[in-house]
Picture 1 (cartoon, rainbow, N blue to C red):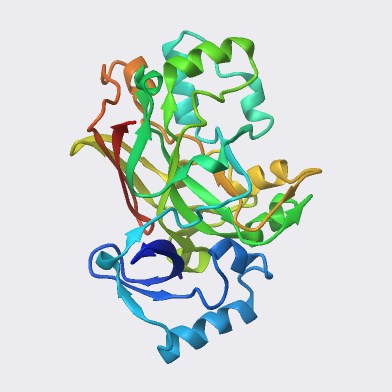
Picture 2: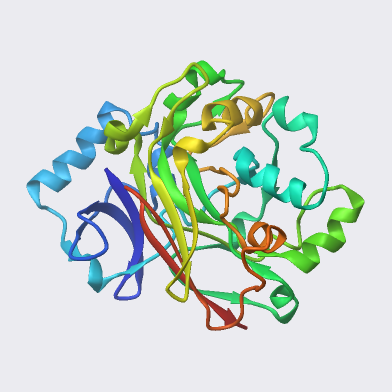
Length: 311
């Protein structure tokens, strides 16, 4: 299934998308719960939940909305928590190599992550930023896992079963603010807390079965990832190249900590997936400006298009 959240005639809702962003149709599922997160909190996407969805989609008892008639939002617009990891070695190595330093040994010991602001989630469309954010404003090409049901102290061997599915994530970064605050070694916050874009849909794990790569550490997927800025090809990677799997990240995140249905975990930037890395390695020498359109695309997960707007 492909879950979406949207606005139609001034009303926010959610549903299941058949097809994609060009010519697809949405079955409105608001009668099951007010939001996707609220629906998942009833017990996750188990057989009963699938039957309830199927009863509506098969009967046609809810309106079928052409995707072009709605405004797509973040597919999970109201997560309780959002974590972002640092899971692609290529990105970590490139940045450190350009600075003339080695990758810290801790990268191979644990999957690290930070917590960002769940109240700054956006979907496709404009992303408002303030003037200070424009000092070295950057995008980040990522994939996010969405938790399907509450979990705590899970092992990597069982963690994939708690993942509802995957979506595209753009972890917007104000690098000048980030550089200043990182001098205190507390992690990023003001450089990150103003916007995180998700969308356009969540593809459930069964939707991606044909591209799944099993491993003892957890699943990966052979899904090409690309980014363009104003139509110019900028980044290219693959979900399969992830070093720390989402199962391993979830094991770490849930240790002594409860994660809820709808919580989001980002992968961190794929190799070549941001201007910071590309500038450090001499590929580019620019940052984002108002009016720039950033388009992230991942096979099976759609096209997340955002435009920078000075607010």
